[in-house]
Amino acid sequence: MSPIGWQEREVTVGERPVFVRLGPEVPGTVPIVHVHGFGVSGVSLMPTAELLADRWTTFVPDLPGHGRSVGWGPGLDIPAIAHGLLGLLDELELERVVLLGNSMGSPVILEVAHEARDRVAGAVLVSPAGGVHNQPLARALRQLGRDAVRENPRMATIVVPDYVRFGLPSTFRLFRELTRFPSLERLLRTPVPTLAVIGTRDPLMPPPWRVREVGRLAPDHVTVVVIEGAAHVVNFSHPAELAHVVASWLDGVEIVDDPEAPGVSRVLRLPRGGRDPAVR
Image (tube, rainbow, N blue to C red):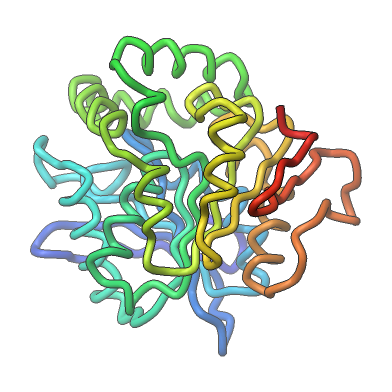
C-alpha cells in the first residue's frame, strides 16, 4: 500500500515496463529521483523518500529488471540500467532532476551524470560501493555478510523477497559488477554537484583514512559527509539523519547534526585539506 498522497504507475521505456512510485507534486522544485541498489526494489528507499517528499516532488522507481519492473531479461549491467533510468526520465518528462542513490544506485547515477550532465542538477551518492576495497569478490561477499548483521532486522523482510524475485544468479552477477566499479575514483571526476554520504559501520566502504583522503581531494562541487552509526543501507536505517543531510545540502546551508534529533547519529562533514580527528 502506498503512503497517503502517493501514486503508483507503470511506465513503458523502450517497450518494457518500469514501475514507479510518485509522491505529491511540489510545484517549483527540482524533482528527486531515488535509485536503489542491486537486486532489490525501491521499497528500501521509501523511509527517506517520504521525509523528503514534503518539500520536493519525489519519484521512487524500481530500476529495470528489479522489483515490479520485470521483463528486461537477465543481461542487465550498470550502463544498461543507467540507460533505462534516462529513458524513464524522458517518459516522465523530467528535464532536470536530483538523483539520490544507495549502493549500486551510486554507480548508476555516476553513469547518468557523465552521459547526460545537463539532466542532473545534483547527485547524492549514499554508500557508493565498488572499487579496490571490494575486491576480490570473495572479500566483498564477506563484507556483505558482515553488513547483514549490522542492518535493521526489518530490512530482511524487504530484501529477501526482492532477491528471490530478481534471481540469485542475477543478483550475484550484478554484485560482482558493482565490486569492479571504481566509485570513489569516479566520484572525484563527477561533472555535477555531488554529495557523498558514508556510514561509519559500513564494511563495504573504504577505511576511514581513505574516506578522509577522498574528502581532501574532492573538488569544490563535491561534499563528503559521514553519519556515525550507520551501516550500508542508510536510506532505511537512518532516514531522518539522511533526509536532514540531503535537505541541508540542497538548501545550501551548513551540514550539521539535526537539532530536532540530537544524539541519534552524529553527522560529520569532512573538511578539505585537513583532518577531522573524529573520523579514525
